[in-house]
Length: 360
Image (cartoon, rainbow, N blue to C red):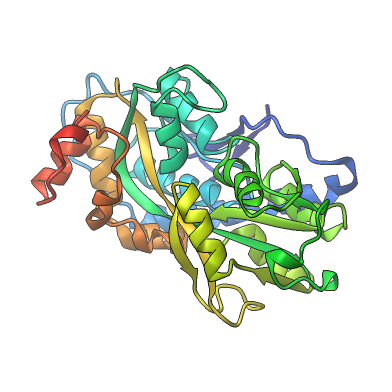
């Protein structure tokens, strides 16, 4: 597995690919260029965070880990940029090496944190609920009873982009048999877009892959469109908008009503001008994301992690605009994952009451 240094320091964040996804041969060069761009952005965000990170009190750390790892998702998606950013912030603030791991997304992240293969990760509440119930598509029959919530991240909006040359302006326009990229298998979009298509009666051939790879495949004409879900704006969608003529597709009000009746998502609006080629707001659906941690990590360490992220929203906004929702007031969006005791302590000390039935 390739390891990518995100900041020029042995103590900095690292990224290792756990997604086991190989880009297509026809887009290998474009993929390499994309990954260089993502590494550059991570370096820039890391440098800014180093200046913004607070110093943390040297409490008793005898049971703290010597290093920590955070499960993110594929390069080209919001999870990777956002996850590398807060990992870097925490690493600098606490003086502990931190790693951002490239994975297949929330379903895999839940399993990796559950088993202790990785310390922390990021999940959407739909896959988390499935995992806790033992209905994970990756590990069916395994109740994920070691998952604990740490802090709210942001809402994941579902959105689609297609080449303008297709002439499609709605999901109804997409013909049966079209090939649509939906992100990594095991990620939130890879799990829910196929379900949405089925619910809407569309016979779509889905293609799985990393966000950067699928963006390249759409540019090369290897897929007909790209449906994704992440914090807005999606880096891969921004790249596509800058490099080719595209059309962004939302849902109709009727489609939103149908989808929300069948799936664990809420009505959502993609704001106008989220991307330059999207002049008007569009209907969508969304799902909340939370950072999670293995239950075995020390309370004082998790408290320190939560304090660092929740107390430094301006630093998080340097990483990605989606962090505007990474504020403690959004703790109540979690009605699924038990909270880690270290997180419970931080929120209750700061005036936020965690429900008794969600205290882990």
